[in-house]
Length: 164
Ligand SMILES: Nc1ncnc2c1ncn2[C@@H]1O[C@H](COP(=O)(O)OP(=O)(O)OP(=O)(O)O)[C@@H](O)[C@H]1O
Ligand SMILES: [Mg+2]
Image (cartoon, rainbow, N blue to C red; front, top):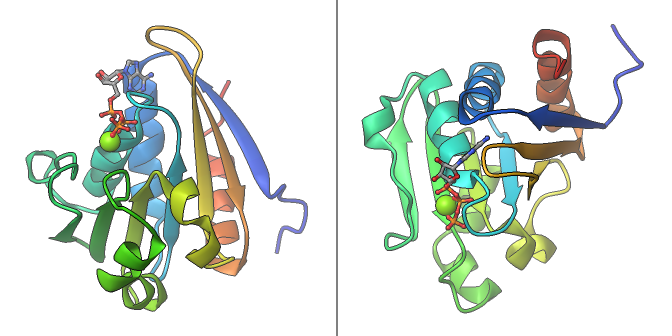
């Protein structure tokens, strides 16, 4: 068993296609119970990334939209997928009223956009992905794992998806 996996990895992505490739790899590596917390500005690529991850989970891309007006989307792929956009939620209570705790402690995969707004109720074992806009077509993604499930997904991404 490898023991030298860092709990944080940075990817410099030169194009939208590279973001999609990483997202798809994450979807392929996803395990039951994975929580992915996406943090970054408007237009940083959070939804694009989730669409690609859904593809990696065998969900057709067309099925996945930005959930700006619907607060949670559910998809049935290789695993159940729950996609939240917390941008329009007033507060943490509204997030919890959607059943967030049950979803996050279940056997599906949760993707949470604007997760920094809900940080205090997110599980420790989550994969944080921070998006930075470094240019019109370039993005820097920093992936950080906080526990066993997220760590093992990060490990697959590190081995299978070098940023260079
Ligand atoms: N390398 C890249 N990775 C991802 N998206 C990119 C990249 N380069 C350009 N883009 C563009 O950036 C935009 C990202 O939009 P997206 O809806 O994914 O952002 P978002 O982070 O979900 O924003 P919001 O907070 O409004 O939901 C798209 O228009 C996409 O074409
Ligand atoms: Mg979005």
